[in-house]
Figure 1 (cartoon, rainbow, N blue to C red):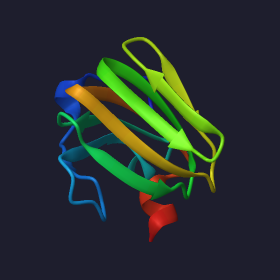
Figure 2: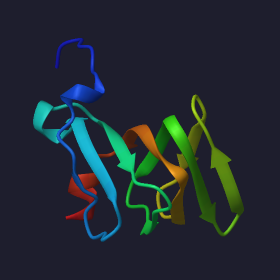
Figure 3: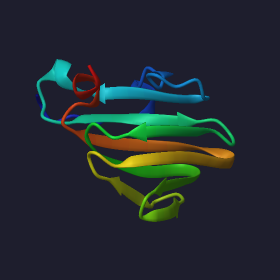
Figure 4: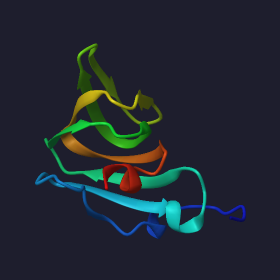
Length: 116
């Protein structure tokens, strides 16, 4: 895969798999391009919450808004420019605040393959 620049406009958003919340993911790099990681953007509506047991290591960078991520270890809240690392196997609840949130993410390995 060649070097490339990625923008949020490159993402095609779809509802986060297995979730009913107003939460959408848009991969821009994944197994289809042959790289070892998935890179994409997430969009969370206001006051949304999803529960997930992570099948991959997940790094989420908050671009807009605020998110709280709760696990057995406690809760962290992140805003623009902050990064949340969530290890594989961790049970988390990701909650957006009143303004919603936009994130960028990187997972290893590919989350779509790991969930299949």
